[in-house]
Image (tube, rainbow, N blue to C red; front, top):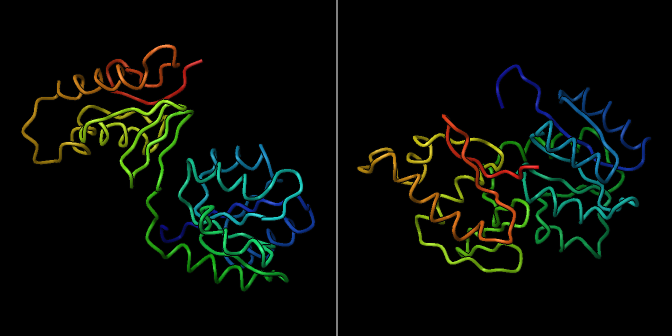
Length: 226
């Protein structure tokens, strides 16, 4: 959080009245708030606006709150607080990727306090890095393209992990050298090109759609090209 800039909070709920109440209450508490109904519009908002924390209705009717949570966790590590979480499903919240929950009745002041605590915690490291059908399990050090397991060397794994933090961002060769080989490295810049070639052979093997692309004069990116 930067001094003078309001923390961005996304509120996801399919009840317009609930969204409006939380939006006005959290704005009074000093947050920058945007709302969305559950489903595609919520995911679009979170991808484009990149909120610093998310309040998600766990009982959404349009699409199950836990399903939205799983998708959000594939590309965002912002703290997620589940609202309206019933007792029976409470223990599942951490496995699904939530950071906290708030019970009804939900008051803006109490929710604001929970959000401030969540924003002060160190950012979590994703257990899995995902883009399209490419999945890296950071803890198990395994990689999958759809249902096909990919065997990667230590350096190959670290390189593709760097490209997935985040996907769609273009990384220069020097950035990748710093991230994967370290600032005090003793390797040539062409080493990145060599390892990218290794990754393409393993990850983008036909008939899979190519994900690793060269941006001429800049570097490399993991992105779906249409």
